Image 1 (tube, rainbow, N blue to C red):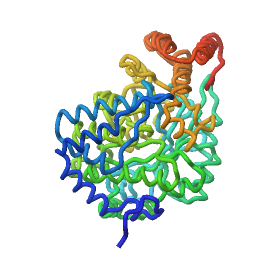
Image 2 (cartoon, rainbow, N blue to C red):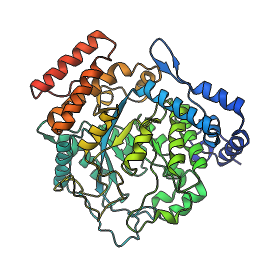
Image 3 (cartoon, rainbow, N blue to C red):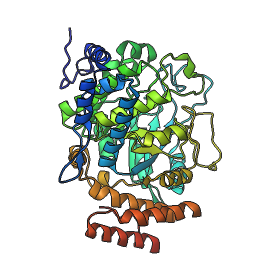
Length: 485
């Protein structure tokens, strides 16, 4: 009989089924306990300090009570506090990125993914290094500075050496004023040695979705292949930390299992990383199951409504105030717009989920033959950037923290005390100015510089504001780029 232990490195002990079930029972029993709920919300509310605003966050039981509560008044308070926390930690900045699919060869049998081994209808493709280079140039021409590389699990077609070579190629491409400054990596669970190699290659965040924390469901959903090993997959972040990667990203695929179970498991995983390594997740992603080649989401019984999805995002933001929350183009414009006010701090833009989906295609063209899932938000990056600004958000292409060594516990200490705002706000404005000069349409450029001028006035330190203004003037007047605090 195992016991719950967040400091343990064994999956069955830090993602403990009994603890999750007890948590769900506790949440159900207290979902109308207004005295308890009021205390939880008061604990979560950001408090002003000398350096900014901070929130205590919530443990998985407290957050599960909020998620279970169905009182409309309480839900509105949850949404309000979630937005307050997001603004306190991340301001009105939204980081932009794009996925880059390298290969869809896969040896796993995941029943919800079109890349599964038995799918004979999807064309299999792996990018050559020259094709990687062309994809990167296409992404740079859009204006992207940050990529998340994706690949199916196949030790023959996509070994770690191939991934490392692709990372080297991506960083080597300097096209016009374009550079990819941060490569995040979303590949299968691997060894400590391979994580060290990824760290040495200069990756940003290592991302791995758990898909589901419910072990019995996990084994059924992953019937064959190395991903079938629940413990090895769930313990991947611990090996990544041991390999020197201190920025890791969690996520579940909502729709595979009951969402309250997944929510509790996700927060327990975040608590485990804090307890065992002193560093919580750099990001948490919230993908929902979507239609794809030979995959019908209606075949799964655990789909969630837009309202429940919004509530999950808000409760994650309240529970883990320091983490970046990512929402992708799986979701449509309306869902993403709502999520931006509930805690999301990173979005993808102009995304393709097919292998080789960028080079040679216009913004309106979209290859579908090797897509991993349907893209709901099909707007160009320029349209997404303008949309963000028109709704009061600063599109940020900043990668400064990663490149200045502010990762892991160094990033977390700055974020948790509110000090990260002192560099993030001007960095966002400078990278936005780069985008406006090099890639934006005239309409977006006009909207953008009006926002930059307005937001410069919000920088509290006069010296920082003056440096940012001087750097933006240099960006406008020359090809000088990559200023950062």
